[in-house]
Image 1 (cartoon, rainbow, N blue to C red):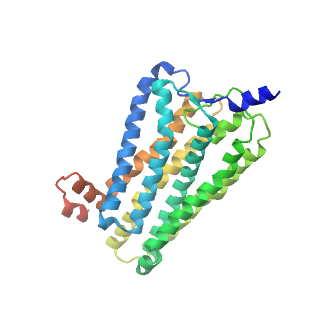
Image 2: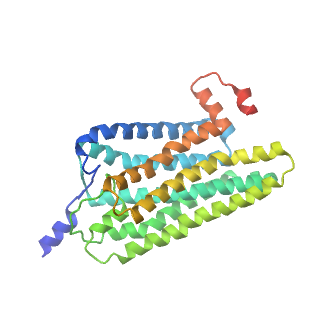
Image 3: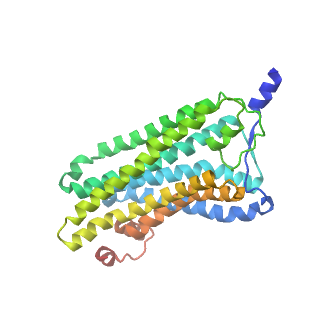
Length: 320
């Protein structure tokens, strides 16, 4: 009996790429590798620009740096095992490594939601109370918000990840993705997993849904304030500062909603669709966020032109 217990709890998990398409894994890895490199370059460039350019040393851009760092974290957490499976067919992953990966993936997902909320707060203060903006969102306050976001996200995920270490695993040990997710691992446990089923639902509603609702209502108040501005040009200028953030919110929450919808109602959909949606959910926001801010934010555009020593049409950019 002790031998059976030992085997079931120490056998490594097996990661899965694209089931039924194993022969095409090398081809599939090409667009994924391009996406990973683009994410690293895009978000890395944003971080470098914000650190190096004193014109970007403002709360709005500090929060953007937090978003870029979070996207880099998600990418660097998933990339090694994904490419290991697709390139080398290296499927085995130990329990400790798997649980750690799941912890960072879920923690950083919550961090992204909370950073988007912080960015909404930044736009809310900038538009509703512009004269006190610099006094409310000081550098110290931004640091406190960043540390608070990271600490709360990490602590909220810790209970379910810690409990994974205590559970026995006596099923196939085959995970359905090329990276570890809590909802995948928990299916392999042969013990009472009621807590691990209910707690994530509470976290999603208490954090994810609440963040979305607060962001939604903050933009209703922002819109109400903007509509009260007499000058049409000033209204357009105020709204334009929010466009990039709104696009990032839509990209993040639409991706999450799509994945949730597929998992909840797509039981008869081929498993490869579930896997593909999970990649879209984890890759699309980190890929799009730098693109959105590079296109819609003039200061970021100017910084990119200077970084690559390109002729900068500064007058035209400011006039737009």
